[in-house]
Length: 427
Image (cartoon, rainbow, N blue to C red; front, side, top):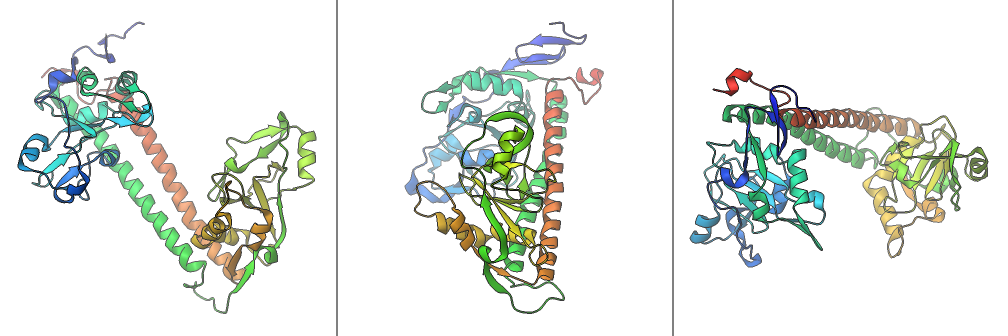
Protein backbone atom coordinates (compact mmCIF):
# COMPACT_ATOMS: atom_id res chain seq x y z
CA UNK A 1 0.00 0.00 0.00
CA UNK A 2 1.35 3.39 -0.99
CA UNK A 3 2.12 5.71 1.92
CA UNK A 4 1.54 9.42 1.37
CA UNK A 5 4.47 11.85 1.58
CA UNK A 6 5.59 12.73 5.11
CA UNK A 7 4.37 9.42 6.56
CA UNK A 8 5.79 5.94 7.09
CA UNK A 9 4.54 2.44 7.67
CA UNK A 10 5.19 1.33 11.26
CA UNK A 11 4.14 -1.60 13.43
CA UNK A 12 1.31 0.54 14.82
CA UNK A 13 0.16 1.59 11.33
CA UNK A 14 0.87 4.59 9.14
CA UNK A 15 2.28 7.49 11.20
CA UNK A 16 4.19 10.73 10.52
CA UNK A 17 7.87 10.20 9.65
CA UNK A 18 9.11 12.17 12.67
CA UNK A 19 7.10 10.07 15.14
CA UNK A 20 8.98 7.29 16.88
CA UNK A 21 7.72 3.89 18.00
CA UNK A 22 8.79 1.84 20.98
CA UNK A 23 7.63 -1.02 23.15
CA UNK A 24 5.73 -0.34 26.36
CA UNK A 25 8.57 -1.91 28.37
CA UNK A 26 10.97 0.75 27.03
CA UNK A 27 8.96 3.66 28.39
CA UNK A 28 8.38 2.38 31.93
CA UNK A 29 10.19 3.16 35.18
CA UNK A 30 9.20 0.03 37.12
CA UNK A 31 8.44 -3.58 36.19
CA UNK A 32 4.82 -3.99 35.07
CA UNK A 33 2.98 -5.64 37.97
CA UNK A 34 -0.30 -6.80 39.50
CA UNK A 35 -1.64 -5.18 42.65
CA UNK A 36 -2.26 -6.13 46.26
CA UNK A 37 -4.23 -9.26 47.15
CA UNK A 38 -7.62 -7.96 48.22
CA UNK A 39 -8.56 -9.96 51.31
CA UNK A 40 -12.24 -9.43 52.21
CA UNK A 41 -11.59 -9.22 55.96
CA UNK A 42 -9.40 -6.15 55.41
CA UNK A 43 -11.96 -4.17 53.44
CA UNK A 44 -13.76 -1.12 54.73
CA UNK A 45 -10.92 0.73 56.45
CA UNK A 46 -7.50 2.14 55.73
CA UNK A 47 -6.20 3.35 52.34
CA UNK A 48 -8.25 3.82 49.20
CA UNK A 49 -8.08 0.97 46.70
CA UNK A 50 -8.50 1.08 42.90
CA UNK A 51 -10.53 -1.92 41.78
CA UNK A 52 -11.49 -3.36 38.39
CA UNK A 53 -14.85 -1.60 38.42
CA UNK A 54 -13.14 1.77 38.86
CA UNK A 55 -11.37 1.41 35.51
CA UNK A 56 -14.70 1.52 33.72
CA UNK A 57 -15.61 4.96 35.07
CA UNK A 58 -14.63 8.24 33.49
CA UNK A 59 -11.04 8.96 32.39
CA UNK A 60 -9.08 9.65 34.54
CA UNK A 61 -10.11 7.31 37.38
CA UNK A 62 -12.55 8.87 39.83
CA UNK A 63 -11.18 8.43 43.33
CA UNK A 64 -13.86 10.09 45.48
CA UNK A 65 -15.78 6.91 46.33
CA UNK A 66 -13.04 4.26 46.17
CA UNK A 67 -13.41 1.45 48.68
CA UNK A 68 -11.00 1.22 51.62
CA UNK A 69 -8.38 -1.46 52.32
CA UNK A 70 -6.33 -1.96 55.49
CA UNK A 71 -2.87 -2.16 53.93
CA UNK A 72 0.45 -2.64 55.66
CA UNK A 73 3.26 -0.11 55.23
CA UNK A 74 5.13 -2.62 53.04
CA UNK A 75 2.06 -3.01 50.79
CA UNK A 76 1.71 0.77 50.54
CA UNK A 77 5.35 1.02 49.45
CA UNK A 78 4.99 -1.78 46.87
CA UNK A 79 1.53 -1.04 45.51
CA UNK A 80 1.12 2.69 46.10
CA UNK A 81 -0.23 4.67 43.14
CA UNK A 82 1.52 7.69 41.60
CA UNK A 83 0.20 10.43 39.36
CA UNK A 84 0.12 9.17 35.76
CA UNK A 85 0.11 5.44 36.57
CA UNK A 86 -1.69 3.44 33.88
CA UNK A 87 -3.91 0.47 34.74
CA UNK A 88 -5.28 -2.47 32.71
CA UNK A 89 -7.91 -5.09 33.57
CA UNK A 90 -6.37 -8.58 33.70
CA UNK A 91 -9.42 -10.65 32.79
CA UNK A 92 -12.80 -10.40 31.12
CA UNK A 93 -15.75 -12.64 30.29
CA UNK A 94 -15.41 -11.58 26.64
CA UNK A 95 -12.36 -10.68 24.51
CA UNK A 96 -13.72 -7.18 23.86
CA UNK A 97 -13.47 -6.38 27.57
CA UNK A 98 -9.87 -7.40 28.07
CA UNK A 99 -7.15 -4.87 29.03
CA UNK A 100 -9.54 -1.98 29.54
CA UNK A 101 -7.27 0.95 30.35
CA UNK A 102 -7.51 3.98 32.63
CA UNK A 103 -5.11 6.43 34.25
CA UNK A 104 -4.75 7.95 37.72
CA UNK A 105 -4.52 11.71 38.13
CA UNK A 106 -3.44 12.90 41.55
CA UNK A 107 -5.62 15.71 42.88
CA UNK A 108 -5.30 15.18 46.63
CA UNK A 109 -2.30 14.06 48.65
CA UNK A 110 -3.59 10.65 49.71
CA UNK A 111 -2.39 7.06 49.78
CA UNK A 112 -4.05 4.84 47.16
CA UNK A 113 -3.30 1.21 46.25
CA UNK A 114 -4.44 -0.99 43.37
CA UNK A 115 -6.04 -4.45 43.38
CA UNK A 116 -4.41 -7.70 42.24
CA UNK A 117 -6.92 -8.09 39.40
CA UNK A 118 -5.48 -5.10 37.55
CA UNK A 119 -2.06 -4.44 36.06
CA UNK A 120 -0.07 -1.25 36.67
CA UNK A 121 2.30 0.43 34.24
CA UNK A 122 4.43 3.23 35.70
CA UNK A 123 5.60 5.38 32.83
CA UNK A 124 8.69 7.46 32.23
CA UNK A 125 6.88 10.76 31.81
CA UNK A 126 9.90 12.34 30.14
CA UNK A 127 9.23 10.02 27.21
CA UNK A 128 5.45 9.67 27.23
CA UNK A 129 2.46 11.65 28.44
CA UNK A 130 0.26 9.13 30.33
CA UNK A 131 -2.89 11.03 29.32
CA UNK A 132 -1.88 10.59 25.68
CA UNK A 133 -1.10 6.91 26.18
CA UNK A 134 -4.40 6.09 27.89
CA UNK A 135 -6.16 7.44 24.78
CA UNK A 136 -3.92 5.41 22.50
CA UNK A 137 -4.67 2.24 24.49
CA UNK A 138 -8.36 2.69 23.59
CA UNK A 139 -7.61 3.16 19.87
CA UNK A 140 -8.24 0.55 17.19
CA UNK A 141 -4.57 -0.48 16.66
CA UNK A 142 -4.03 -0.90 20.40
CA UNK A 143 -7.25 -2.83 20.92
CA UNK A 144 -6.43 -5.13 17.99
CA UNK A 145 -3.04 -5.91 19.51
CA UNK A 146 -4.37 -6.51 23.03
CA UNK A 147 -7.29 -8.71 21.94
CA UNK A 148 -5.15 -10.70 19.49
CA UNK A 149 -2.56 -11.48 22.19
CA UNK A 150 -4.96 -12.28 25.04
CA UNK A 151 -5.53 -15.87 26.17
CA UNK A 152 -9.04 -17.29 26.07
CA UNK A 153 -10.21 -20.34 28.04
CA UNK A 154 -13.22 -20.02 30.33
CA UNK A 155 -12.28 -16.33 30.58
CA UNK A 156 -10.14 -14.00 28.50
CA UNK A 157 -6.94 -13.00 30.32
CA UNK A 158 -3.84 -10.94 29.61
CA UNK A 159 -0.46 -10.83 31.35
CA UNK A 160 2.27 -8.30 31.94
CA UNK A 161 4.41 -9.72 29.13
CA UNK A 162 1.83 -8.94 26.47
CA UNK A 163 1.44 -5.38 27.71
CA UNK A 164 5.24 -4.98 27.93
CA UNK A 165 5.60 -5.92 24.23
CA UNK A 166 2.83 -3.62 23.05
CA UNK A 167 4.13 -1.21 20.34
CA UNK A 168 3.48 2.47 21.05
CA UNK A 169 3.60 5.49 18.70
CA UNK A 170 5.58 8.35 20.21
CA UNK A 171 5.14 11.87 18.87
CA UNK A 172 7.21 14.59 20.51
CA UNK A 173 6.17 14.97 24.15
CA UNK A 174 4.54 18.38 23.60
CA UNK A 175 2.50 16.97 20.68
CA UNK A 176 1.40 14.09 22.90
CA UNK A 177 0.19 16.69 25.41
CA UNK A 178 -1.72 18.59 22.73
CA UNK A 179 -3.46 15.40 21.57
CA UNK A 180 -4.29 14.41 25.15
CA UNK A 181 -5.76 17.85 25.87
CA UNK A 182 -7.93 17.83 22.75
CA UNK A 183 -9.35 14.37 23.52
CA UNK A 184 -9.76 15.26 27.19
CA UNK A 185 -11.87 18.27 26.21
CA UNK A 186 -14.19 16.05 24.16
CA UNK A 187 -14.32 13.59 27.07
CA UNK A 188 -15.33 16.41 29.42
CA UNK A 189 -18.18 17.31 27.08
CA UNK A 190 -19.25 13.66 26.85
CA UNK A 191 -19.05 13.15 30.62
CA UNK A 192 -21.03 16.33 31.23
CA UNK A 193 -23.78 15.16 28.88
CA UNK A 194 -23.85 11.72 30.51
CA UNK A 195 -24.24 13.26 33.96
CA UNK A 196 -26.92 15.67 32.72
CA UNK A 197 -28.86 12.82 31.11
CA UNK A 198 -28.66 10.78 34.32
CA UNK A 199 -29.94 13.77 36.29
CA UNK A 200 -32.79 14.36 33.82
CA UNK A 201 -33.77 10.68 33.98
CA UNK A 202 -33.90 10.85 37.77
CA UNK A 203 -36.06 13.97 37.57
CA UNK A 204 -38.40 12.26 35.13
CA UNK A 205 -38.73 9.21 37.38
CA UNK A 206 -39.52 11.46 40.33
CA UNK A 207 -42.08 13.37 38.24
CA UNK A 208 -43.73 10.11 37.15
CA UNK A 209 -43.91 8.92 40.75
CA UNK A 210 -45.58 12.15 41.86
CA UNK A 211 -47.83 12.96 38.90
CA UNK A 212 -49.09 9.46 38.05
CA UNK A 213 -50.22 8.81 41.63
CA UNK A 214 -51.84 12.20 42.19
CA UNK A 215 -49.41 13.04 45.01
CA UNK A 216 -48.54 16.19 43.08
CA UNK A 217 -51.28 17.90 41.06
CA UNK A 218 -50.71 20.20 38.13
CA UNK A 219 -52.11 23.73 38.55
CA UNK A 220 -55.84 23.99 38.00
CA UNK A 221 -56.72 20.34 38.63
CA UNK A 222 -58.72 19.03 41.56
CA UNK A 223 -61.08 16.18 42.29
CA UNK A 224 -60.71 12.52 43.15
CA UNK A 225 -59.04 9.93 40.96
CA UNK A 226 -60.49 6.47 40.37
CA UNK A 227 -58.65 3.16 40.33
CA UNK A 228 -59.50 1.18 37.20
CA UNK A 229 -58.25 -1.98 35.53
CA UNK A 230 -57.08 -1.93 31.95
CA UNK A 231 -60.05 -4.14 31.14
CA UNK A 232 -62.32 -1.29 32.26
CA UNK A 233 -60.63 1.43 30.24
CA UNK A 234 -59.64 -0.41 27.05
CA UNK A 235 -61.86 -1.01 24.06
CA UNK A 236 -59.62 -3.83 22.90
CA UNK A 237 -56.78 -5.90 24.35
CA UNK A 238 -55.36 -8.40 21.87
CA UNK A 239 -52.02 -9.98 21.04
CA UNK A 240 -50.59 -10.87 17.64
CA UNK A 241 -50.24 -14.19 15.87
CA UNK A 242 -49.10 -17.28 17.77
CA UNK A 243 -47.70 -18.75 14.56
CA UNK A 244 -44.64 -17.28 12.92
CA UNK A 245 -45.37 -16.10 9.38
CA UNK A 246 -43.19 -16.82 6.37
CA UNK A 247 -40.63 -14.01 6.27
CA UNK A 248 -39.07 -12.49 3.20
CA UNK A 249 -41.93 -10.51 1.72
CA UNK A 250 -41.73 -6.79 1.02
CA UNK A 251 -45.26 -5.58 1.71
CA UNK A 252 -45.85 -5.08 5.46
CA UNK A 253 -43.72 -4.70 8.56
CA UNK A 254 -43.73 -7.56 11.07
CA UNK A 255 -43.22 -6.33 14.65
CA UNK A 256 -42.06 -8.38 17.65
CA UNK A 257 -41.08 -7.55 21.23
CA UNK A 258 -37.54 -6.60 20.13
CA UNK A 259 -39.02 -3.57 18.35
CA UNK A 260 -40.63 -2.19 21.53
CA UNK A 261 -38.28 -0.08 23.64
CA UNK A 262 -39.17 1.83 26.79
CA UNK A 263 -41.53 4.40 25.30
CA UNK A 264 -40.24 3.99 21.74
CA UNK A 265 -41.32 1.96 18.73
CA UNK A 266 -38.05 1.01 16.99
CA UNK A 267 -38.62 -0.16 13.41
CA UNK A 268 -34.92 -0.25 12.47
CA UNK A 269 -34.77 -4.05 12.84
CA UNK A 270 -38.36 -4.87 11.83
CA UNK A 271 -38.69 -7.45 9.06
CA UNK A 272 -41.30 -7.49 6.30
CA UNK A 273 -43.77 -10.11 5.17
CA UNK A 274 -46.05 -10.57 2.16
CA UNK A 275 -49.56 -9.13 1.89
CA UNK A 276 -50.99 -12.66 2.09
CA UNK A 277 -49.21 -13.43 5.38
CA UNK A 278 -50.12 -9.99 6.75
CA UNK A 279 -53.83 -10.39 5.97
CA UNK A 280 -54.08 -13.56 8.09
CA UNK A 281 -52.44 -11.85 11.09
CA UNK A 282 -54.18 -8.50 10.75
CA UNK A 283 -57.60 -10.15 10.84
CA UNK A 284 -56.77 -11.19 14.41
CA UNK A 285 -54.95 -8.07 15.58
CA UNK A 286 -55.68 -4.91 13.57
CA UNK A 287 -53.03 -2.51 14.88
CA UNK A 288 -53.95 1.17 14.50
CA UNK A 289 -52.14 4.44 15.07
CA UNK A 290 -52.41 5.47 18.73
CA UNK A 291 -52.68 1.91 20.07
CA UNK A 292 -50.49 1.19 23.07
CA UNK A 293 -48.08 -1.69 22.34
CA UNK A 294 -47.08 -3.80 25.36
CA UNK A 295 -44.49 -6.58 25.32
CA UNK A 296 -45.76 -9.74 27.00
CA UNK A 297 -43.04 -12.33 26.36
CA UNK A 298 -39.27 -12.49 26.70
CA UNK A 299 -36.56 -10.63 28.57
CA UNK A 300 -38.06 -7.19 27.89
CA UNK A 301 -41.57 -8.03 29.08
CA UNK A 302 -43.31 -4.89 30.31
CA UNK A 303 -41.87 -2.51 27.73
CA UNK A 304 -44.48 -0.25 26.19
CA UNK A 305 -44.65 2.23 23.32
CA UNK A 306 -47.29 4.08 21.35
CA UNK A 307 -47.86 3.12 17.74
CA UNK A 308 -46.89 6.27 15.87
CA UNK A 309 -47.18 4.77 12.38
CA UNK A 310 -50.03 5.43 9.95
CA UNK A 311 -49.34 2.26 7.94
CA UNK A 312 -50.70 -1.08 9.19
CA UNK A 313 -48.31 -3.82 10.29
CA UNK A 314 -48.44 -7.32 11.73
CA UNK A 315 -47.72 -8.35 15.30
CA UNK A 316 -46.29 -11.49 16.87
CA UNK A 317 -47.91 -12.85 20.04
CA UNK A 318 -45.06 -11.35 22.12
CA UNK A 319 -46.78 -7.96 21.75
CA UNK A 320 -50.31 -6.96 22.75
CA UNK A 321 -52.27 -3.90 21.63
CA UNK A 322 -54.25 -1.83 24.10
CA UNK A 323 -56.85 0.38 22.41
CA UNK A 324 -58.51 3.22 24.32
CA UNK A 325 -61.50 5.46 23.76
CA UNK A 326 -59.38 8.55 23.10
CA UNK A 327 -62.26 10.85 24.10
CA UNK A 328 -62.03 9.57 27.68
CA UNK A 329 -58.59 8.05 28.13
CA UNK A 330 -55.15 9.17 27.01
CA UNK A 331 -53.02 6.29 25.62
CA UNK A 332 -49.89 8.30 26.45
CA UNK A 333 -50.99 8.65 30.09
CA UNK A 334 -51.46 4.88 30.33
CA UNK A 335 -48.12 4.21 28.61
CA UNK A 336 -46.42 6.14 31.41
CA UNK A 337 -48.54 4.30 33.99
CA UNK A 338 -47.36 0.96 32.60
CA UNK A 339 -43.73 2.17 32.61
CA UNK A 340 -43.98 3.67 36.09
CA UNK A 341 -42.54 2.03 39.19
CA UNK A 342 -46.01 0.84 40.21
CA UNK A 343 -46.77 -0.52 36.74
CA UNK A 344 -43.52 -2.43 36.48
CA UNK A 345 -43.92 -3.83 40.00
CA UNK A 346 -47.41 -5.09 39.14
CA UNK A 347 -46.06 -6.77 36.01
CA UNK A 348 -43.16 -8.32 37.94
CA UNK A 349 -45.54 -9.64 40.58
CA UNK A 350 -47.80 -11.19 37.96
CA UNK A 351 -44.84 -13.03 36.44
CA UNK A 352 -43.28 -14.22 39.70
CA UNK A 353 -42.84 -17.97 39.94
CA UNK A 354 -43.05 -18.51 36.18
CA UNK A 355 -40.21 -20.40 34.53
CA UNK A 356 -40.77 -18.36 31.34
CA UNK A 357 -41.13 -14.60 31.48
CA UNK A 358 -44.64 -14.06 30.17
CA UNK A 359 -47.70 -11.89 30.59
CA UNK A 360 -51.02 -13.35 29.49
CA UNK A 361 -53.89 -11.25 28.18
CA UNK A 362 -55.86 -12.18 31.31
CA UNK A 363 -53.12 -10.70 33.50
CA UNK A 364 -52.82 -7.58 31.35
CA UNK A 365 -56.54 -6.92 31.76
CA UNK A 366 -56.09 -7.03 35.56
CA UNK A 367 -53.42 -4.30 35.72
CA UNK A 368 -54.80 -1.48 37.89
CA UNK A 369 -53.98 2.23 37.76
CA UNK A 370 -55.12 5.47 39.29
CA UNK A 371 -57.03 7.41 36.63
CA UNK A 372 -57.50 11.19 36.56
CA UNK A 373 -59.99 13.13 34.47
CA UNK A 374 -59.28 13.11 30.74
CA UNK A 375 -58.04 16.72 30.87
CA UNK A 376 -55.63 15.96 33.70
CA UNK A 377 -54.45 12.77 31.97
CA UNK A 378 -53.63 14.82 28.87
CA UNK A 379 -51.81 17.48 30.89
CA UNK A 380 -49.69 14.90 32.76
CA UNK A 381 -48.91 13.11 29.50
CA UNK A 382 -47.79 16.41 27.94
CA UNK A 383 -45.40 17.17 30.83
CA UNK A 384 -43.81 13.72 30.68
CA UNK A 385 -43.65 13.76 26.87
CA UNK A 386 -41.79 17.08 27.01
CA UNK A 387 -39.32 15.56 29.47
CA UNK A 388 -38.81 12.60 27.15
CA UNK A 389 -38.26 14.92 24.19
CA UNK A 390 -35.56 16.77 26.12
CA UNK A 391 -33.90 13.47 27.02
CA UNK A 392 -34.01 12.35 23.38
CA UNK A 393 -32.34 15.60 22.27
CA UNK A 394 -29.59 15.19 24.88
CA UNK A 395 -29.05 11.53 23.94
CA UNK A 396 -28.70 12.49 20.28
CA UNK A 397 -26.13 15.13 21.23
CA UNK A 398 -24.27 12.52 23.29
CA UNK A 399 -24.25 10.05 20.38
CA UNK A 400 -22.85 12.73 18.06
CA UNK A 401 -20.20 13.71 20.61
CA UNK A 402 -19.12 10.09 21.04
CA UNK A 403 -18.89 9.71 17.27
CA UNK A 404 -16.82 12.90 17.12
CA UNK A 405 -14.47 11.54 19.77
CA UNK A 406 -13.98 8.29 17.86
CA UNK A 407 -13.21 10.21 14.68
CA UNK A 408 -10.79 12.49 16.52
CA UNK A 409 -9.01 9.52 18.09
CA UNK A 410 -8.60 7.88 14.70
CA UNK A 411 -7.18 11.05 13.15
CA UNK A 412 -5.08 12.43 16.02
CA UNK A 413 -3.56 9.19 17.33
CA UNK A 414 -2.32 8.24 13.86
CA UNK A 415 -1.06 11.73 13.00
CA UNK A 416 -3.46 12.14 10.07
CA UNK A 417 -4.42 15.44 11.66
CA UNK A 418 -1.69 17.42 13.45
CA UNK A 419 -2.44 19.88 16.23
CA UNK A 420 0.91 21.66 15.98
CA UNK A 421 2.91 22.83 12.94
CA UNK A 422 5.25 20.18 11.59
CA UNK A 423 8.24 22.39 12.27
CA UNK A 424 7.26 22.60 15.94
CA UNK A 425 7.20 18.81 16.18
CA UNK A 426 10.99 18.77 15.64
CA UNK A 427 11.62 21.20 18.51
